[in-house]
Length: 292
Image (cartoon, rainbow, N blue to C red):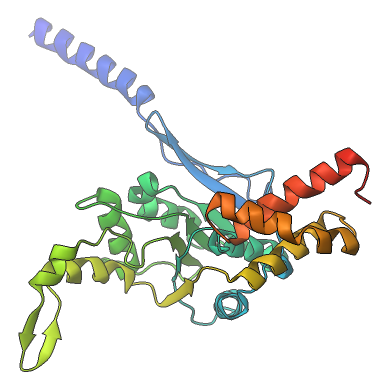
């Protein structure tokens, strides 16, 4: 009997030590430290870390995406006003301002209580935990998933689908999910999947694989598509950023051919390429003493 009691006592000591090693519940951050946060999980421990240095891009800096800007801006204002609003999926060409638009919304509306939580794809399984942490807060939260795409059978895919669908419990009304992706349906699409389509009474029905892929993206209530820029749109964005960096108008006009050559070398006329060219060109002008 004494040996059994000794064994139980030792087992309790081992369990007590194990409890100290196990991650505890996630602690709420200092909500006044920033308007933007990043969800991080390291060595099994999760935390919501304030982002001290935020991207300062403004809505006015985003050119030639006026329709897309108006749609997501209206949705965000509805959300801030406590009215009904949708989760948003921004898809399309790379470098056209999808993620910049979300960051610009935060800069515009942070004074009105908008907050952003950046969540990596690998951490999407923690979405229910994040939602629970911010439930009841007075702020309005956007859970931001940037450059999102999935492969078949990923746990993160199932977690996002469950949260968007509401699972058993509804998502708190102070939370929306904004995601960007280069893929319209967030997953790779293959030619042979089209062969699974069937005709029923004259109607075309997609195959099961296609239906499964569409089922996630259509859970976002608002789809916003972005398209490659024309040459004139690209040059317009270049001119905006050169002016933003203090380059005189005469020098901006003279930079046209260099900007086109830069885009040709990069194989893209995107907003990101325009911004990169403007930084390089403005920096070289300053170095040569021709800036301001």
